[in-house]
Length: 173
Length: 289
Image 1: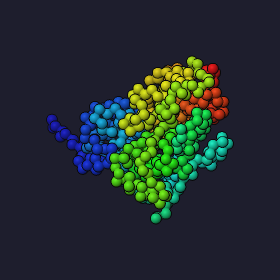
Image 2 (image 1 turned 60 degrees about the vertical axis):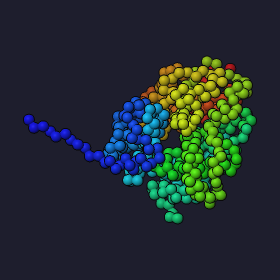
Image 3 (image 1 turned 90 degrees about the vertical axis):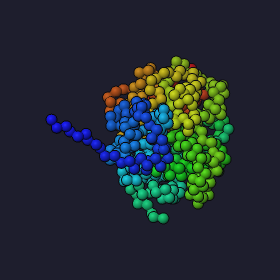
């Protein structure tokens, strides 16, 4: 009987070096795969594909395709339970955020985030405060919600490069 | 007692009754809140796609507060943790502070690093004090069983928020019990309400909120008391949708803490916006003596 050769999957040892440079992801090599993060994750309990421990391992191996394709990275609630309880202080939540940053650099961004960025460009806030809400506020005897200096927001968006991620055309300054 | 006041975007966009209750209660307690004019987004949700923008937007808010020379009070847990984190980060990275300040210069703003960011609960608990609050109350809740909801970003990451014991918090429990109500044990108390996943996957967000609603109900709660606008939105505004999706009935009133406090100060339900809660909350008035 012919023995099947073990299958060796392709890894990318360079990837983690990119990740290690991002604030919050500096300690990924300290992870000893105990699984506290996954055990205490509210999303992992509802979604099989979302495993913080696996995400750390995939990131260290540089399995970029696995990490970036699909919605997995974007399901983290950012509740910081894993961050708080990690015995190795890996800052798992921040590492997932760092992975999103890299995904965005490679052109992967979840559509919901594009919507939030569009709203920021248009309203100066992630969530739009409509005239209806301001009328309601007036009826309640409350002052109108602060008006945002949209020029300033637009300047900040341009300077930080966020404007490149919006679907709205912004004037090049 | 005087503070700069920033309510964030969720409150004016969705739950204005939270702002109403805060203004009424603080006024009655002699706490003065000065609205931060021109304040925009703190950038919390964009941190994971572009941390620089969050840094700049949050610093801008703190620079506006710096101009007032007052500590900054926020209502939203996300604003709280984000502003605190940015404040810490800038303290450790003076070069970055200089860079951000250059960006703010055209507006005539400069963050000097002197603003203390406080959650509204810290005003009640640390600055005003539970005993003094108790002395202001003319009414008391009797036999009202409350499931207390802190929300994530007051407690975690604790090294940034420095708010309370992240695993066994007590501040909101004590503030709730000052009104005579009883804070009950509910197993999922410290869990996330799911709100941040709503834009990405609303079914996932609502399934997390449902877990908590069922848990509070099962533990015998008459209501949930929150302190975070995101949690308030998930539990109150979305409760009818969750009931429909899962074909379940909770009828669980969701109160924002200052609403509960105002009622114990003998304010009318309308004064604290109780008539504006999506889930009828007047049912808890029968416990008020």
